[in-house]
Image 1 (cartoon, helix red, strand yellow):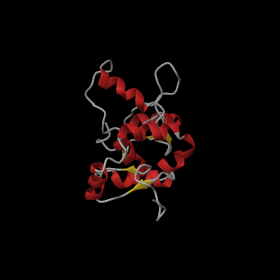
Image 2 (spheres, rainbow, N blue to C red):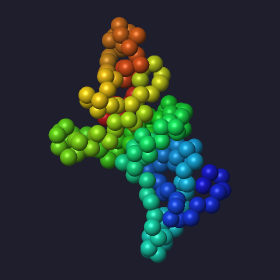
Image 3 (cartoon, rainbow, N blue to C red):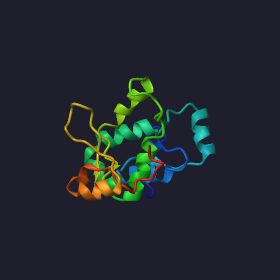
Image 4 (cartoon, one colour):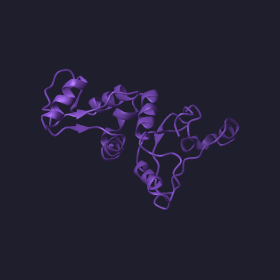
Length: 164
């Protein structure tokens, strides 16, 4: 952990390899979390031995970032990484779900997640309807030019299309 500190298997956070694994590990390590990187055969050995292991999931990651408001700087220190972390946080959500379906209601877990890049170069979070007057707009370049003073409330135009 973080350059050599020991973490017992039962206290360590395991991040499954994938497109966003390095970013998730890095952000959690920057946040002083006990993240470890072990070969798959070691992970399987721990599981076979019945050790209680905790694998980081997009849902847990959302919860952790929201609950640890003092750690936000670790998650948004690099804009490109923050956008990849947002993509990771969205992985387990079904993007075609209707708002009133169970899958659609899972989007409520995004409320408070401070990884939404806005056009003024900062990040904001989403809020539940009726609990805040904070709004994030989606605009085209001409609208952003016209509404320049509202850029802190307009989604960054450079957000990749792969971010649903």
